Every structure is written in C-alpha cells, then in structure tokens.
Amino acid sequence: MAVRILCIKTDAKLHHNPYVAIDSLEWVNERINVKGITERTKLHDWIKNKEGEAYILDDSGNKTCLIPALCPEGNKYVKTVNDESESEILFGLPECA
Image (cartoon, rainbow, N blue to C red; front, side, top):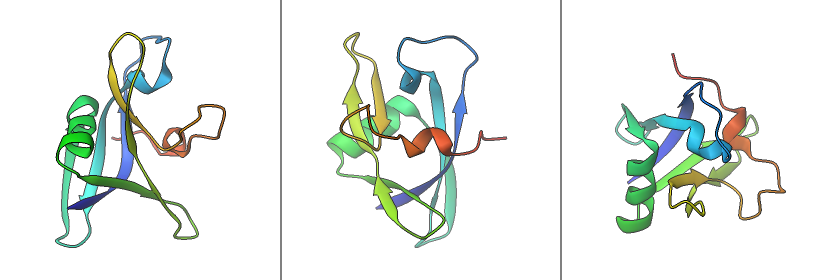
C-alpha cells in the first residue's frame, strides 16, 4: 500500500531534531480514496517493517518517498532526504488542521 502525505502536525516544544517535533502526518491512499492520520513513530515502523510506502507530490507531480530514520537519542522519525544538508520538503507541507 502507498499513501501520499498531505500535511504534518507538529508540537510547540523546541527539539534538537526538528523531525521529532512532528507528532503525526495526515495521508490519503489515492487508490481507494481513504484518508487517515498516523503518528510519526507508527509511520516509521510501517515503512521500515511492513514495506509501506509514503510519499509527497510536489506542484509538478514529482514523487519523493519518505524513509525511516533514528536520531542518536533513539527517536524514530521519517524524512525525504538522506543528507540533512539537502532541502527537506517534508517541512514545506502545511500544518494539519
């Protein structure tokens, strides 16, 4: 199953890793037109352990997949880039309502 990420829900706390500030992500399975919201850690596990696919579409229709990651403290998160010096499009998504 593949889902497209629509928006992110972040908390107001300061974090050393901005990815950990993301609490949950809203998604849509466009094949069956079902929407949902999943916690960051559960989405990480689904991508890593269940071979799930989550992606973002840009305005031109280009698809960028999310990949699972761990910060040094052991917190699970998802991101779109291998190297954090690259631009992270995940942070460009709107905040969920």
